[in-house]
Image (cartoon, rainbow, N blue to C red; front, side, top):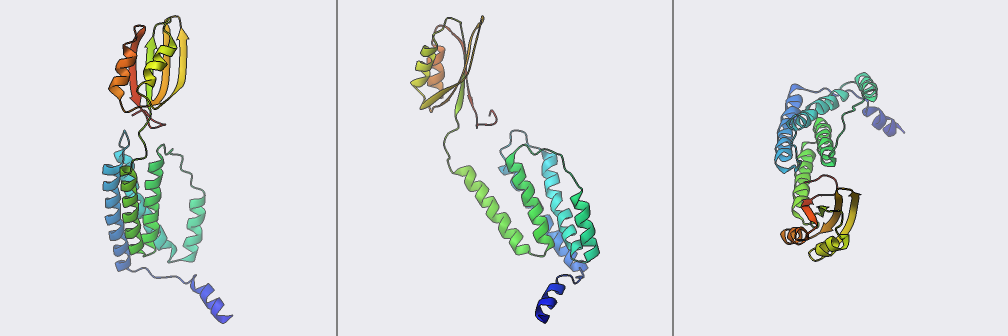
Length: 221
């Protein structure tokens, strides 16, 4: 029973954080944050790279690490910090799921380094980087295409579908708009012969224009 009480109360003992401890934590955080900055800049495939987001992501670990160190020094500060953080609300929308991964990475770095587990922070960063690189390299199938066709009103839609079928593994009509000016058709398909596909559809007499756009299911690329 005495051992149980001792172990329980030992977790509430205030720990003195020396200047050497602070410098060591901040140094490791700085190195890993710089590493994350470089990885996000050169590995991220976002169409519009946000430098401000990258800088903010690299600074977050410093605040988190110092908060963790502060929580270890005083129980009153710990309770006050928990209450303060509970009322904070961040309303900035994270549009790219990968940005959320990088944010969690930054928070993880701050927490783990603040707790003094430097080796864990370094190993995790390396493993995460290798996983991201592997996911980028491993082929997961070719992105589908959107075939956008503008044709005259008297065009036979089956002729367009037949021409597209010659060079596509699958096809699905996503949109069909018929007006007095003509027909606007959007077809999702998979193909390895983009040029041949576009030429076959554009050779149809009633077709005015043809566009082939690659997309990843969310954003047009």
